[in-house]
Image (tube, rainbow over all chains, first blue to last red; front, side, top):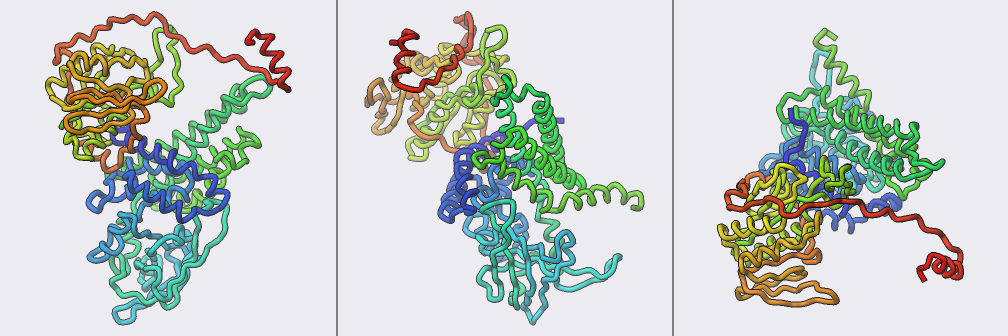
Length: 387
Length: 252
């Protein structure tokens, strides 16, 4: 067993880290305080990311991506994760892997421009009435000749404000299943500007300043059948085949942020003096550091192993669920304790800790809540026993 | 034209250096190592000359422990075409002295016949600032050290040098040795696609014996010690108090 990084992986980490530290982190305070990533800055940083060859690194080489294996890609995600979502997601873009399902002219209209940074996508699954229970979605499309007519509302849709088109999952019928009737789902590519498709400002929330969520409304939005991504009624299948290790991506982002918080806490514990000595000499502080480091390492090993198995084709749903669960919970604990070690200073926005602490909260909710992850893990344990 | 760029693997400039317990040198066990920053500048300059059509091949060479292939891979990920690794030591604590390095580089240069060698002006670990100059002497080539600007035209290099109190512009006939100062350029990031491509670029492994060079040390390190810790200062309330204190301590 080799737990080390290859030369390529080491260089990927170094390049990404250098880019994040020199190009992105200096803008953190501006984005946090104003709540906005200015368009001008976003485009400037996007240009730099493309020039630095960090753009669309999740995509295969044949379409112009870096062609990274899952583990290498996740190491890159971890480094990006050290800065805020607004700054890494909207600048060093990673187009949805699912665009690899584009066929024919869809490739020239959506996939290739997305890899080149000319067009941006967003994914719309969640609805006010369909969160963890995605098949309960109400947004639907009915056939009308060769066209489909979409109606319904999606919400919590990240970066839809800057996207040029949306990948939207909607119900297109029902079928019988062993557990009763269930919805058939189809994925559509919907361009902004299509009549009947509106993007509205979403909710103000605790996490991710400058990285807004939006509400997508479909009101008799007519689409030709050529806008179907994959096949009719096979929306979840196309997601399953192409979406990739998104839970591991969330885990990696959390590892990056947790590592940064831990580094700050460690440095502070070594520098700050109270009662005539470094506070790190007090067991109350040093044991916290030890626990934080242990949690981080455990989460990192789970994530790396799942990534490695992903590339071997042996990963299970539970492997990815464990990594996502552990990494998001470890981040919550580490962010909280890092603030505790800093005392009042930890809550001031001159340090990135209060942001890391706020941003950590959503990680235990999106891409499957911690409860859903535990459900997936336990289901895999109990199913062979008839559970 | 072919450009040869020697690169050294040194302790990373961000690492807090610690002296080994027995004072025999700096502790390098489990410490992050990177390409000497001056050498990164040299690689970048070579890449720019290639992009400008002045050079057509860039060969990077490193002399040291086997792990130095790290920095060669990094140089190839930045854009160098191929690499030569001369494994001259087993222990990271064993530094190869400038004269031995220069002799090996001279032998490599005889084999490779580059039109130009660009090196870092010094390595940040022991600050010898000697290899480039020794190499020029061994090859009988011209040298332009501490370069902050390089122009190649009509078989000559026009080099701006950073000297005490100003800039000096000199011309050297090619082939020549140029050593790079930090202000020569700002090295690029190794892009992810280039990192993946670097894996396929050739890296030849050699030994000092292949070049007939003896790397036995000629220098003995007597003692290594950390710089003295700065004593805490005092705060003064007024200029008068400052002057009094300075007099008291005998500074004025």
